Length: 186
Length: 381
Image (cartoon, rainbow over all chains, first blue to last red; front, side, top):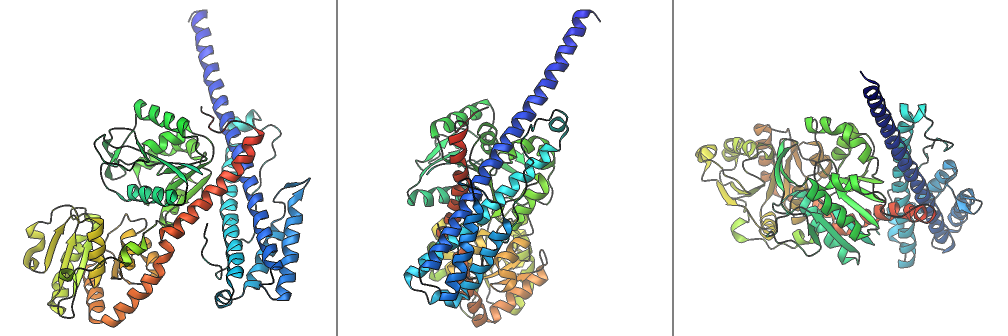
């Protein structure tokens, strides 16, 4: 081979390597942005559910004991979300506690049938926001799973394409919708 | 919201995904959203005015059947233009795996993307071939929906990743209020049983029903079987039972509702490949009793037999026993049908479209924040 041919082969190899790196970096960047928006959405839905629960607790629809407990759990859930004024899903345990508290306070399906229209609307709001929490958490954990798998691939690890972006973690909480809640409506 | 919906299958021929896309678009528009649908269709095929067509589609063998798909530079260019013109808040791609507009849109677009997976396949060579090409585009889907547990499992097994389950929608009222026709109505002496679906497609199971006929007619001599759907039934397949079988040919949506509202039983003898079982839900909405093979999708719709009778898939003797049992117990069959007509409301479009909108909002909310901080919406490669 002449010098020119060797040069051409080396240029080809460099081009292929550059292309692999470029595609990998682009894919990883896309996944990181996806995780970021899924996380924003999850935080948004968790805040919306806590606010809906707080509204329900303050409405006088529930019995006094349930009202106090739900209000406390909702306030704790909201407080745990606020970090420098930006909502962040930081504690699954506190969100799970809110789930359990609402489930207990709502009682049986028959109890919901007894509510007046205002009560039913408030409960419907809790149901709608809760359903969105289950969706947002599914989508967030799915984005995290894909990103973690991508970050274990060789080009990403060898070239530290992830930079300083921390490894994302799944968000675990008890978000099983209570059977008593009306079917999710928009 | 501005919503862009992509349908990979041509509107030239009717099909489950096409009907779903059409009904979803209609339901979203009636709630005040702006909707544009991108789909392949010939220029002379009549389509609703919210459909943007990409022109001719080609019949392609894909995944065990022939589908009319659109691909190539022309389809890609039109998809690109549609995405740029649309400025959608959410892009909803149906069936992103087949090599058609769905895959093209997923390849070109970035941003708040929702995808619905309709099909359930136990194994497919096409999917194994596609797997390495699909991994990167599939990473762009921010909200994945499966229409059934079976469709979700197909996605998990073939592509990895999870999906939320939102069932197919049905206009329950259209079937609940369908007018029965006297000539199709069953009586105690002459009960009627309906079969719907392509007659020449083995997995629809007409053959299983025909082979069960001798046993059923021995117990129920007055039985009438009404068969509706495209395709031919050979005289040989009918054999000595031609007098009990009435072939109606293809029927309109309206006639389908009337048929299901008139008959005593709807029979679904499918042998496989069913992801959801929308006809079962339609029959239940119309108030027909249901006898179906015990495929996973059907068992879930029938709540494991609480809303209808299931029999061992592909077994004519078991099907005969199930049909005879239901026809001999008319009050019991009516009770089941009443319970079923109540239970199907969870598949009504009013509920299904709310769930789909919740997915749109969940996906779009995060994106608005991201938009503000980083970059443009429909960043193209």
